[in-house]
Length: 395
Image (cartoon, helix red, strand yellow):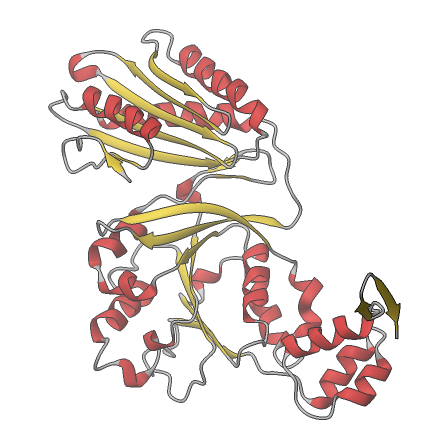
């Protein structure tokens, strides 16, 4: 059952889902509760660390803080050293000069929460960022960190980080013979948000929309991919929407060996299977939600926001709202079709299945159906066993 420490002042909620986290957040609440004025910062860095390196990483970060801030050293008041993460609470200064740091070091991410009476209390985040640049990490090829959002039971935005496998577009380009050129023009854009803020992909199930999306995430590595798992509440609740938009994307290591800060990272918001947000017939029932989408892509809400919204649906689209298609707002509207019989045969023949293509492809096929034929054609079935008592025979 989730436990919640006493909320800090100025509307900052300190929440916990486990007993150990409750003790950490309770200590933070005690320390910041006495402050008359309170500023807060949250920073997150993506890292790849084996579990046995977590304590050493924590010690490296603490040493960096103490070295950089020798005049007013940090005092660790709570430390939880677990096998899967390290949690610590540190404090420095007193009275109006007090600063509180909550630090979580886990295998996938390092997260720092900073609280202080002055707006410059977040300076410690820069020290942590420089220290993390030197932390060794093992990059898994094709594995991309993706942030997932949902609305919690209390109405607040809750996020989590997961890694998913994402191919290069060149590896899967042959799966999109009808729209390959359109997708290629999209994935090579250097600053896509300057050409439009909205992408809408639609088409029958099994046409490869999800894999095209994964490839786009990989090619647009400079953008922070963030999946909204509940599009309806996201656009219906202004509080939930604003919390997501105002949240800082996690910092990530760049090719130059430094961490790209949240200020440098544009964002790619992904909303799968949400056709109601773009259809003309939804205007009456979902006017406010569609209005929020339009405002974020080319309105007041979107001003200063370097973000793109990608919406997909498996449903047949008859009438897309003209406001969605407006030049300057819509970066791409694209239907991902299935394969014609000729395209399907060529796809199978390119993979050495000419006989399968000749015998089993007569009409249109989806990409999923072609992969089923491919795996069936390359799979050698095991002999069927018929059990008779304690013996078996092949037939």
